[in-house]
Length: 252
Ligand code: SAH
Image (cartoon, rainbow, N blue to C red; front, side, top):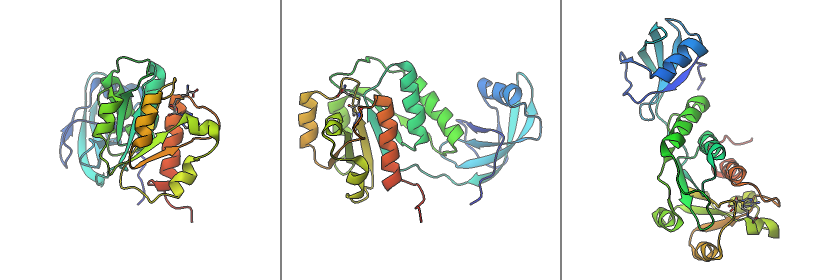
């Protein structure tokens, strides 16, 4: 299917259907009017995470007001791969980075997880959601990654169903030089659903390692011989996973 290049692509919380009139929020108005310098009649894309993508025409645009007329659907709703990212959160800018990049890589759930050596005590969900929305707008996704509340590892693991493959990114395997993530994935049947787990800067505790080692349907993987920072590790793991099992087209 040919993709239409739009001058702007906006997430809106409204229902979307033909003939509707949408008022973008103030930031979006500023973006359309002052950053993109769009004028009446220009066409933008709208999506709301449920109704697919719609073409809309700017009906009026000024510094303080703007209205968009929904014309037609350009793409039906499509889900991202069923891939969760569980990670011990890091400090602000790198946390934003993880939410943005994980969204770009197609994670469907982003779940900050408190592990024994995690340094962060609070996570701002709204900020993570804003990052996930911005990434979806930019990356042409039709859904928004769901941000779950910061929760202890035990609770998070208990909420991962047994049939969801757990991919444990293990820094200890990295130093031993085995369990290359791509080889491990290639040797394992494609899972229906998965969750990637990334630890904190301090790594996993002995107790956590014991719990993870005992877990069924868990693949322990290495992301190469270097110890990566948690944000790099999250993106590297998502990339390896998506390239083997994900929604990328085959290289044939
Ligand atoms: N302080 C720890 C490193 C933690 S890095 C140490 O020196 O051992 C933060 C997290 O990123 C790890 O818990 C792991 O989940 C992931 N990670 C980083 N590098 C990795 C690698 N090469 N292979 C697998 N996981 C890695």
